[in-house]
Amino acid sequence: MNATHWATVDWSRAQFALTALYHWIFVPLTLGLSFILAIMETIYYKTGDEKWLRIEKFWMKLFGINFAIGVATGIILEFEFGTNWSNYSWFVGDIFGAPLAIEGIMAFFLESTFVAIMFFGWNKVSRKVHLWATWLTAIGTNLSALWILVANGWMQNPVGMHFNPDTMRNEMLSFANVLFNPVSVNKFVHTVFSAYTFSALFVVAVSAWYLLKKRHREQAKYSILVASAFGLLSIIGTIVTGDGSAKQVARYQPMKLAAMEGLQRGSRGAPLIAIGTPNVRKGGLLKSMADDLKGKDQLDVHIKGFEIPYGLSILAFNDPHAFVPGVKDLVYGNDKEGIPSYKERIRSGKIAINALAAYKKAKKAGNNDEAAKQLELFKAHFKDFGYGYFDENHPEALVPPVTISFFSFHTMVILGTWFLILFVWLYYALFKRKLETNKTLLRLAVISFPLGFIAQELGWVVAEAGRQPWVIQDLMPAQVAVSHIESSGVIITFFLFFVVFTALLIAEIKIMTGAIRKGFDH
Amino acid sequence: MLRKIWNFYYEGFRNLSADGRKLWFIILIKLFIMFAVLKVFFFPDILKEKFHSDRERIQYVEQNLLPGNQ
Image 1: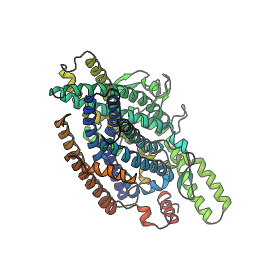
Image 2: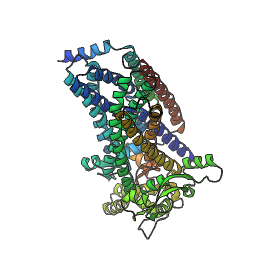
Image 3: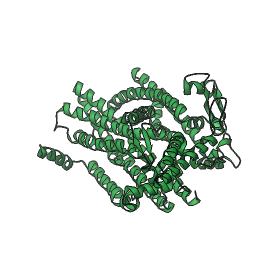
Image 4: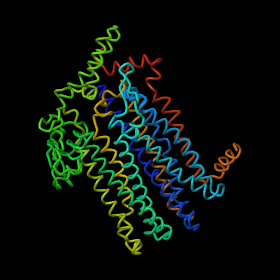
């Protein structure tokens, strides 16, 4: 693989990361705020109290701004699949097609119908129908996320398919296995709970700002009442499903877990590093971080910090004495624990690639016996197919960026813990009727919104940077998935996206802050 | 029924607030940039545009996935 192709690979990765991270600015607020609106409208429907109608309409306006700016930004990712990732697009076959088609149809019909009733339907449909439309908008937007996360979960743990060597694509064997892939199920629940938490932080932050400014005090307090209850349940859900995610990662992507913890050598009763820092390697911190991005010297990254004994073994396997493999156990193998080395898996992958090529040649030549033999060999080694694209003398190329994975994971966990404390504190202050006088808490609530945004983005960094170099776990690395196109085109569109998305973000912030300044009565 | 639906959307858009109009303007500009500029000029579907049949597409992907083995 030449340097020109690597430039395309790196820029395609960067572009996908940029568009996915920008897209994820808008999505979580839509997912969570839609349910907060549904809850607020239900209270209005049940009580008939006009103050809830004013509260509902205000948050609905902010929901509408975010929805309008964010809508269709995810389609850009699909453009990229067709241009930058054509090998991957072909290889995944109909696995992606089905969930994304369902997503497209559901998003169009559910959202465009019920969102319209939500915004245009006041005084035109009955209160009951309007309430139904609000709930169905919430359910519809969340179901859209389900299909995308099913597709993403399949990339992290490909199941429910078989590879057809004649068409060079994967074909779905069981839609149920793809849909109920344990990684997808957990990923969906964890992602939406974290999105709900983020939305609750948004409502809490805006309301706390009003209380600090002594404006709309009643509406702000009632908004915090709903949002902090919703946020508290959501952050508990996020933590519980986060634990589930760690177990899935330990089982299906052990290298990602080793990178998240910066664990070089595994052990039984492995400790969990609660807070720690990596060693700064030769050349200083900046060079260390640059090397991390390039995937260089990842076997030299060591994390030191405060350790919780047995913590990692419990987190990964619910067993304090379980063995958790480290980066070096996976790269070099560990006979005692029955872990094959990457060198062995690379050899196995090369057998799969060669057998596939030999199968094709034999079939073309009409040699059916040889084709059948090669096909059997290919099937036996298919689980290591993607490893065959690596050099067995450099198995360290299969290690993801350790420092980035470690910091992203730990910062996300620390922030999640803070959000739990914040929602409990807010609820306690509301219950004791001391919320308005507690300026510290209100200021902390305001600054927690950007922290929530950081936690959201870091969640994706952990999930996606931690699984590098795989686009499809064990089957397809990024350098094979990327199209053979000029990197200059990808660089141009990278900056085009950067400009377009930044303009959208500025527009969102400007319109949103304008609407917040106008307040509830506007 | 269709007329009712039409009127529902028509009235809704006609009575948009100033912020609502601004948002729809942004949506339309965004969709124009995405579909009429980015998709058309910068994001061709390589497999669809370069090749005319699945057989050709399979060959192309084979060349990329099985380098040196063809």
